[in-house]
Each structure stands twice: as C-alpha cells, then as structure tokens.
Amino acid sequence: MESILINTTEETYPVIVRHEAIIILPNLFRDISASKILIVTDTNVDRLYGDCLIDLVGGEWTTYKHVIKSGEAAKSF
Image 1 (cartoon, one colour):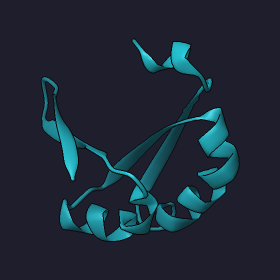
Image 2: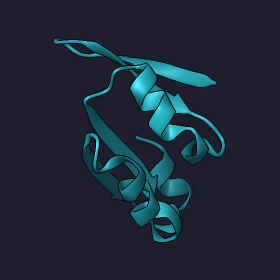
Image 3: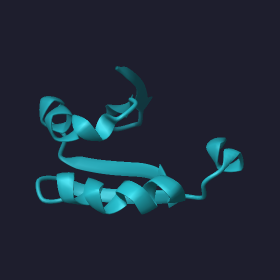
Image 4: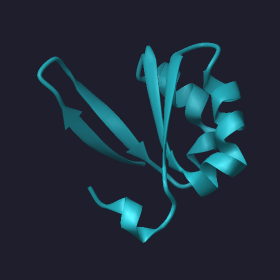
C-alpha cells in the first residue's frame, strides 16, 4: 500500500493511496489509531461512494470530507 507522509508543525500523519481502499478503511484507521479522518474525493467518486464512506467511518471517528471538481485540472495544486 502506498502512503505519503505529511509533516506539520505539530505532527506527522500518513495519506494512504490505494485502489479500492474502501474495503479496508475501518481496519486501516483502527491500525493507525486515527481519531480524525479527512476524506478528499472528487465529485464523481463522491456521487458514487460519498454516503457509503461516511457511513463506514462517521460513527467511530470525527470525519470531514472535502470534495473537489472532477477532471484533470483539479488534480494539481
């Protein structure tokens, strides 16, 4: 599984990148002792899986979701 470490002034945390990650999300979050979760997705994926993601993780963790426009233009910062 690919992950990217994000370093902030207060802590370091992983960003997990994985095909079909939805299957393992609850176990993954328990394994890394997450207390807050930020879901970053695009409008297409949100339309298909957004509610399911919140249902999977929303009850156990403080969950936030940020939806960006779909398309190549939205994939760069």
